[in-house]
Every structure is written in structure tokens, then in C-alpha cells.
Image 1 (spheres, one colour):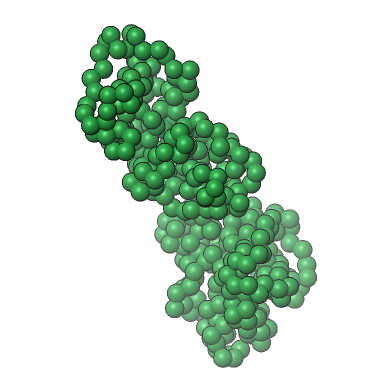
Image 2 (cartoon, rainbow, N blue to C red):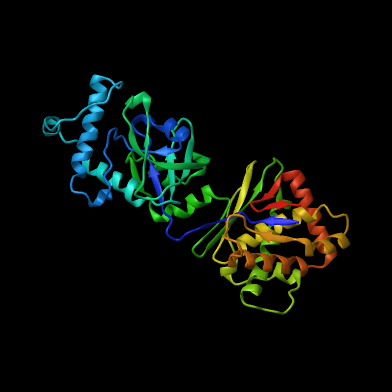
Length: 372
């Protein structure tokens, strides 16, 4: 009987970027279908060195702008040669500096594993979130036959991992995505929100986060009470394990008492159907909540208290989204097992039955997943 935390371990260096898919969103489908990101720079010649270190970046951008102009005037079904005379006569665009920064950000600064968020037109009400799949300083040649014809464009590989309803975004994040800068770094204050939109559970620096979903229509105060009981237990047992407290903890006392604030969670809830409760903590409590709710789901198939008690030793807590034997998983496993073993078997059986009822009625489901 296995509980998989599925908590993404986000490196401290990860950053989040905003990508606008071209004027009038014209590259949106290409970006999504081909799993790429590029700027409106057909024919741009990538150098061997980082863009920020070359002396002729402005000239290379001008060549791409001239190429784009030639495609519009002379057609997209042939390669276009740009002469020195073309370069000297071409009027410098007002957005040249902005485009330089965008190219440097996309090809030099965006690292493998960084997140990128891209809006769709407002009428669709969707945004796409992706992860850069290749190393900074590398590129592929992409195509956009509809707009560039036979001319290629340098691009980065992106794996689009989640589509999100834009009404789930904060007003600040949603508004920032409409700034039609082609590619730029998102404010660090918005990183946590993007992580929450991308991953059901994650660990980032000293922040732990998980989600309890309600997938069906009938969410009531019974589910709220059940989650509250488990979160109180998780906070107290997390503190006991973190501080190496060996004394036994009475479950009722743990439910009614207050752990130190750092072991309690901030909670964000949207319980409309379907909905969720997100827990975020500076200790591992949030992951314990998800782990215990998943464990209760597994144990709810037991027919009596004796079966529940006998099944607890068979529970295994893992994290398929983390390196093997990482400290966090071990800590969550130790806390969750101690919490379950510390409860009276009759009361634990009743808690399992409450979980079964919550699953049936409200579709209560943990971000941690179960395997028998």
C-alpha cells in the first residue's frame, strides 16, 4: 500500500518568465503544437557565443527585421537575401532595445527547468504554463509556414505542462501577462502563485505546499471539519517529529491544541464544485496533510478497526517527483506513520469511514496519490 506525495522539488534557482505569442497571438498555436517558444525574428543568425557578449546583436536583429519586411512584401515562398545596402537604409524600429533584451533573456538567461507562462486571447480565458526543456545557450530552428514560409527562426524547446483557467489567476498576474513584451522575467513576488498553478504539491526553498481537491458537487461543512481535524493533527505531529519529541501525543489533545505557528498552514480555498483547499507551510505540515488524507483513503477499504491497525505497517510513503531517499520524503513518512499509529484504532477507523463518505459525496481527493 503506497502513498506517492508527487511533490515537485523546485530548485532555488528556478525562475518564471512571461511569453507573449506574437502580435494578435498569431504564434499561439505554433508554440502549443510544436512545443517551442521564439520571437518574431525570422532568419536571425545565432552566434556561437552568448548574445549578451557579441558586438553585433543590434545588426543581427536588424537583419531579422528586414527579412520579416521582405517576407511581407516579396512573399514567403523563397529565401530572402539581406544586403549591406538593405541594412544601411532600413529604419531602426522603436522596439529595438526591447527586442534585444527579449532575445538575451530567451537564449542566454532562461535556464533548463525554468517555467514560462503564456496567455491566450482574453475570450478563451486560458493560459498555458510550460517548462524549458533545453539548456540556456542552445536553440533549435523552428518553422512558421503561415507567416515565414521557408524561412526558419531560432527557438527554445518548451514542454507545456498545464492549461489553467485565467479566472484562477490573481488580478496582478493576469494583468502582467497582457503586457505585450515578447519575453520577460516575471516579478519574484508572483513565483509562488505560478508554482501553485503548475504543481499540485511542491517544495521550494522553505515553502511546502499541497492541495486537497473536492471533485464533486456536494461539499459541506463535514468535509471542512474532516480536513480541519487532519490539519490540526498534522501540525502537532510535524512539530513533535521536527523537534525530536519522543513523548506520545494524545490525538484528541493534538486536535484541540495549537502547535507553533510555523507548523500551521496558510490556507487558500475555492470550494465551488469542483474546488480545492491549498495548504502552504514553512515546515513539512502541508505535505503531511496530503499524505494522511491519501493514507486514510487507502485504509477506508478496511472492514473494521483491527484491519486498519494491521494495515498501517504496510503503508509506504514515497515521492516519485523527488530524488530517491530525499530528506523531505523521509520526514513526511515518519510524521504520517507516527500520526496514524498514535491514534486509537477505533477512532482511526471512524476517521477512515469519514474519509470514505467524503470521497463518495464530495469527491475529496489528495494531491498525493495512492497505489495498492
